[in-house]
Length: 195
Image (cartoon, rainbow, N blue to C red; front, side, top):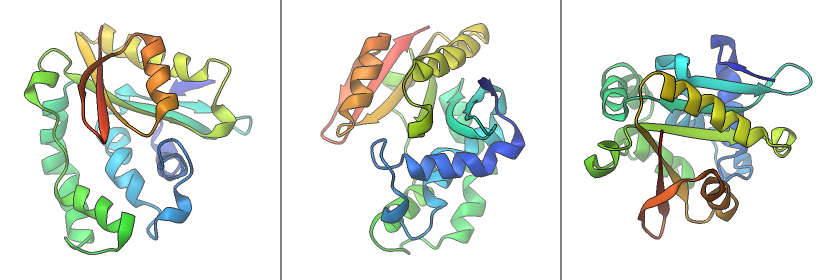
């Protein structure tokens, strides 16, 4: 069942995020601090824009996947700069950690920004991750449709997202949904769709 995000789902956002953090595969053993993936890629959506956050439940009623969106990327990034990143930047010293932890801590101190050429026509963005128990059977498409419908109803003209160049399964999924490549580099494909 797909439903609106609830504050009680926050811990599950963290768990899902680390369990899908390696281009859709489990990254739990790749990091020492299991919360870092969620800090960088998921929690801020539940905390700051819950109206565009949805989860799919497993048979036990726990969130087994999420789709998290921001309708106005520049406004969301600005809000994160004031309300979200400072506490994490105080918690994690810049330059600390090793390996993947260090990279994620670096992202806390230097959050990425999408180029104006992308956010102009595609101002919204999203993150979607599903645990293996929620994959298949059209769940990913239904999750996407739920968020796209919500963004469209709230007036968004377009949406973008970034996909790891290593995640070929996700790239195929988005192509099937009608996303077009906006920018490609060796690390990330930026895709967009008009709403």
